[in-house]
Amino acid sequence: MKYVIIGNGVAGIHAAEAIRHLDAEGRLTLIGDETFPPYCRPMISMVLEGATPPERLPIRSTDFYRRLGITPILGRRVSGIDVEARVVRLPGLEDGIPFDRLLIASGADPRPITADGLHLAHIFYMRTERHIREMLDAIPTVKTALVLGGGLVGFKAAYGLLRRGIRVTQLIRSAYPLSMQVDRTAGEMILNELVRKGLDVRVGLSAAAFHGNGRVEGARLSDGSEIACDMVVIGKGVLPALSFVPRDRIDVDLGVLVNAHMETSVPGIYAAGDAAEFVDIARKTRWVNAIWPEAAAQGRAAGMNMAGRPVALKGSLSRNVIRIFDMDVMTGGWVDPPESAGFEILSRHDRRRKTYRKLVLDGRRLVGMAMVNDIAQGGLLISLIQNEVPLRISGNALLSSGFNYRQLLN
Amino acid sequence: MKQVVVHPERCVGCMQCMLACATAHSKTLHLFTAVREDPLPKPRIHVGAGIHGEGFPNRCRHCDPAPCMLACLPGAISRIPETNTVVIDPDTCINCASCAMACPFGVIRYHGDAAAPPGKAVAVKCDNCTARQKKGMVPACVEVCKSGALTFEEPASALGRKTREVARSVSRDAGGEPIAPGFALLNAVKRSQIEMEKR
Ligand SMILES: Cc1cc2nc3c(=O)[nH]c(=O)nc-3n(C[C@H](O)[C@H](O)[C@H](O)COP(=O)(O)OP(=O)(O)OC[C@H]3O[C@@H](n4cnc5c(N)ncnc54)[C@H](O)[C@@H]3O)c2cc1C
Ligand code: SF4
Ligand code: SF4
Image (cartoon, rainbow over all chains, first blue to last red; front, side):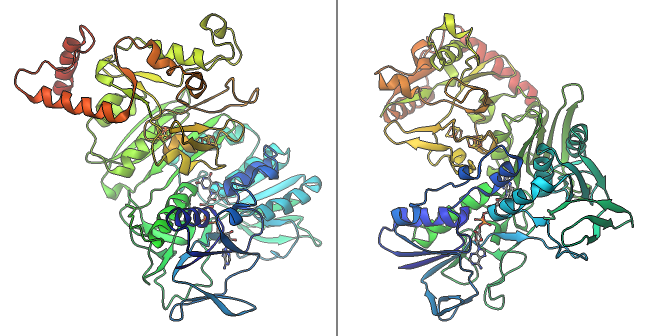
């Protein structure tokens, strides 16, 4: 059996390990355009912040490929897939790489923005360890930074730069940060905390143009105002990295569509991680949940299926945990559904203790939750959402932190 | 290999296990001196009080596959195959709480620990008293639990006994396994309260 995996991120690595676990003989090739050892992408913001040295990033040792008998092809970008001939195309490689089973685990690329002056130096995206190295090279000369986007990455960039003692202005389109992950109450709690720590947040704005002499010196905002900055970080979300996928042959929406076995519309070709579009358990519709634990689980499942053990996943679930300054935030499932969805919403906000808990219920089924500063039991709630367990205790009982474990777990 | 088995129906909520656990994971290993250590030793087993005051000793189940292990960002969580124990390496842990998000039992806490670098908060959970087991001792929580809510045994034998218990409890004159004295009544009261609340 010839296995080929495109992408040496967490999804690809877990798939390779699962394949090797079940099939010691098969030929396994892993193609990735990053040459750094397989590493923890979420941790790059900790390197930016200075809390972790870059040497701590790898999640597998350098002899990983050798130990597992993997042929790595690193530093090369896949340019196409020939579905008929069952071959992966790489520039400069005439015959390409033949496969019996293929995994697309190419992850995602930062969503590009349109603005004038994007060619200037000191304008960064934040996705790879290389991006961070470039940012660190720039930082000694930086006094003020502009961060675009109020999502997880923009937010972590702003936090990291603040911790470096840089004055940061963050532009976000919505009324509060992390609007995809949290609801208004939690979002405003986070915003207040950041503002208290010195972040300058401007809502309802974006950048229209950048100017400077070689490197960026300032930006013109969508309302016509000007702002000076020595550095820009663009964190406007991500898009699945699928430039090499033949869309006329493999079904693609935002990500590559997969079934419960992580298989695409073409038998023998699989997808996992940020590149894949699966069903969301809470929303019950197709969704790309671009998060680490999902990429690991999907990669693992894809690998098992590729090696012939039919395992099925139920769907993916958005969930996140963010710890910044003195704040812990955990969210899962559908946190902020539109009113028309008709869900029951329960919440408890203790302003004095700065805690917040919110549950979203569809009848007896928990579909969403958010917790601020009170997260220890959050995993239990997330597993209730994930497993669609009908609740045996009232939502209000579940809302108090001393809820009855025995009744839930027995 | 032997595992800690939890029998929540026998828990009297005395929290002795918490004290024993904290002591077993302190620097000095003695309750007397442990209370003066910095960081203050904390338990890895948590007796949650239910809404009717009943106890539930909650500890890591060392799941296989372990959701926390898949979710851990830097790969700080691994399994010791010999004792089937899921452990967290405090040096690698970045205190990100991804494991709390993944653990369906809510058993992971975050704080300083005798085994962690000084001043660093890390994820802490039950390690099956690996250090004690190496010395031939049973886990500390089991040693102190006098009501039989925590036992250390082969999972297969625990399963067999559970099956017998269930079988016996459905037969008409079922006596059931003796549970902690007085608690049968208390549990009955609680159960009826729960029933009432449901209506
Ligand atoms: C700053 C930051 C912080 C984050 N924080 C969190 C967090 O706290 N929690 C969380 O759950 N998630 C977080 N994420 C998201 C998480 O990192 C991703 O969900 C996860 O890495 C996805 O893994 P993957 O294997 O699908 O893709 P990736 O990790 O993107 O790996 C894909 C690999 O494929 C390679 N590749 C792509 N195209 C090609 C090609 N054509 N040819 C060859 N190779 C190719 C890429 O270079 C890359 O190495 C964060 C992401 C970032 C950037
Ligand atoms: S910490 Fe939780 S998820 Fe991890 S092994 Fe223990 S019980 Fe299972
Ligand atoms: S808190 Fe520590 S052990 Fe838990 S997921 Fe994060 S790094 Fe891993």
